[in-house]
Length: 163
View 1: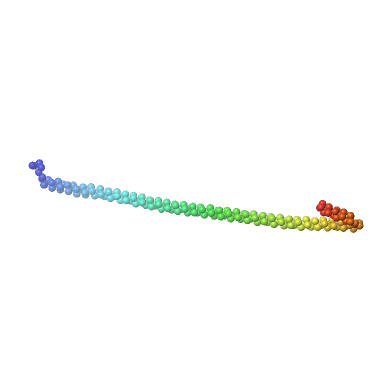
View 2 (view 1 turned 60 degrees about the vertical axis):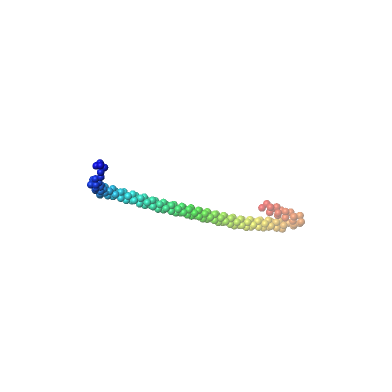
């Protein structure tokens, strides 16, 4: 039975060696490994914080660019609208100026036509006076009978038709 026997002193020494080995490993191995793991965890947390910060910054820049784009579109629409309004105003002014010029030309033409009518009327009056004077002279030169009177009137009408 000596082979299967249990030696308490040997168990206690083995247990003491195990505890001593555990304490030595804890002091010299566990704490540095734990420190390295803590540092690694802190580094990972820092990387996550940096990534979150970069994501937040990217979202802010995206929102800012979206707002700038919307502002640029609104500004472009405003510029286009303003240009269209200016073009319409210029077009209206050109049409108004053209109408005023056309009205002036028409008014001047009407005045010129009226002056020409007056001149023609005066010329016709002068011709009628000349013809009447000539007719009166002929009538005074000779005695007029009914046939002569008719001939003088026909002659007068023919002379008026020629002029």
